[in-house]
Amino acid sequence: MKIEQLYTGCLAQGAYYIESEGEVAIIDPLREIQQYIDKAKTNNAKIKYILETHFHADFVSGHVDLAKQSGATIVFGPGASTDYDIHSAIDGEELKLGKVTIKVLHTPGHTLESATYLLIDEDGKDHAIFSGDTLFLGDVGRPDLAIKSDLTKEDLAGMLFDSLRNKIMPLADDVIVYPAHGAGSACGKNLSKETVGVLGEQKKTNYALRADMTKAEFVKEVLDGIAPPPQYFAKNAMMNKMGYDAFDTVLKTGDVPLSPEEFEALANHESALVLDVRPQSDFIKGHIPNSIFIGLNGSFAPWVGALITDIKQPIILVIPEGKSAEAVTRLSRVGYDNTLGYLEGGMDAWKASRRDIETLESISAEEFASRAKAADINILDVRKDGEYQSQHLENAQHFSLDFINDKMNEVSKDKTYYVHCAGGYRSVIAASILKARGFDKLIDIAGGFGAIKNTDLPTTNFVCPSTL
Image 1 (cartoon, rainbow, N blue to C red):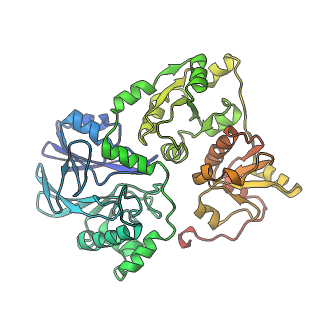
Image 2 (image 1 turned 45 degrees about the vertical axis):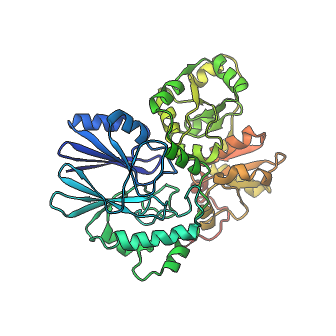
Image 3 (image 1 turned 90 degrees about the horizontal axis):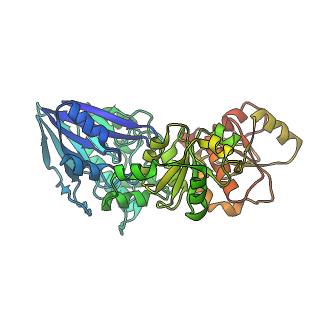
């Protein structure tokens, strides 16, 4: 028996490869499926099952493409309904994979069709659970993502309580837990940085598995402090339910070199969004007017999904050299399939064509502190709610990047704003969006709050985020 976790940091997502006696099951595959086909071929094995723990909302799964290319059966939990062929399992159903067995445990709560897959080894011993978004390390899945359901989030939270108590907690303490996500995912609120654990440890440390917890307490604690889901979640869930274009087609149409003339024509006449995915330092030094920065070197795909509201938006890319296929791939992971190409030769080609370039002023935390002491200035803190509540500059305006599209009426084009996040990535994203909408008096603070704390500017008292 072979188990391999294929973890993707940008999405904080774990896919799984399970093999026994030449038969393979893939759990929650990513959009780019060739890696699974190649792995099975190298091992002289055949993909038999594609197991989906639920209709994912935070990424587009590769299950449809993988089934077409491998001939494997797509398996969902009870009640799943799709526009393509699947096997909708029943609770307790056992799937044979070589000498091991995979038992389907229906665990509704995160979504109605959510399933946990229990792997039973060749000796009949419970070995591991692939818990999807039902159970994370340190947390459980958010119960507010059901699409087209008349159930409330309280109803789903109650179902999740029952699923955990009746299906998962009775399992032995030494059962390994392989969750679908780790820290950084918006599918929960308190996920651990660890990506593999054991059930006994979760029973001791995970707040949602507290033995003396009542259902009412569980519902209250699970829902308390949960942020609204990013706008792309419902759209990705529908793509996973209804199907989508083949990834190879998306890559072929998106990974296209464009001259400056072609690039400008698409921006002007096709209303294509210019998305600059270079490091923020390069964007600061020079960028195409009205372009939006979301760098590949950060949580690229989730920020694209959160901030670009039209999932069918035509996109043209400014990329680091050799990164076009990566950028198109990572966009497709969250369903942004309408990339039209990238600027060949990058900003050097744009400059050589004598087209307009803009810059973004960026200053050190020390220079910022000096200016703040000398005059009354406007500060935008674009971190998440919990980060701001934990500690912030006393006179900073909270302007969370997550909800920037809904907050434009809270800022004025007549004012100068100093913008910061935690380390410098998100502040440049925010500044680029504001600039594209006509705000031209923006100054980025390099190093963000991490650097600002080393100055003597007054901040609120620190509050541990886990207590908020």
